[in-house]
Figure 1 (cartoon, rainbow, N blue to C red):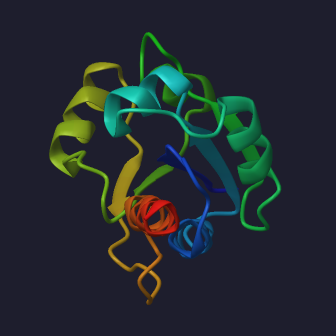
Figure 2: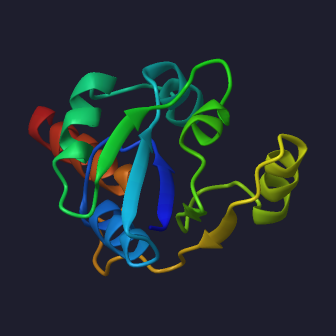
Length: 144
């Protein structure tokens, strides 16, 4: 059985996430998805809109996901050490460089294959930032 692992903030779950996780699942038999903690989301996105427990529950309910877990606030690779996936699947807009991640994993004696998924769903609202922009512009328009 091949275990895969994917990471994300999942600030607002959208079709880009669904497509990414579906593609990630195609590489493995069991997909473990690591949902970023609120503190991590705040560092990456500036604020956390949906609390981590709710994001975790939504991600866990998605069809491709076999297990959803919260990431670590102290050590981002602790979850990799715990689950020891065979494959780590990175999304198209994750800044992590495959070679750097492989280097960090190798230092810990871990050697999962690192794969980058480059496809996103089509449409204007396949990224959290675009959904937030749309909401903010609609809110401003109502205030005028």
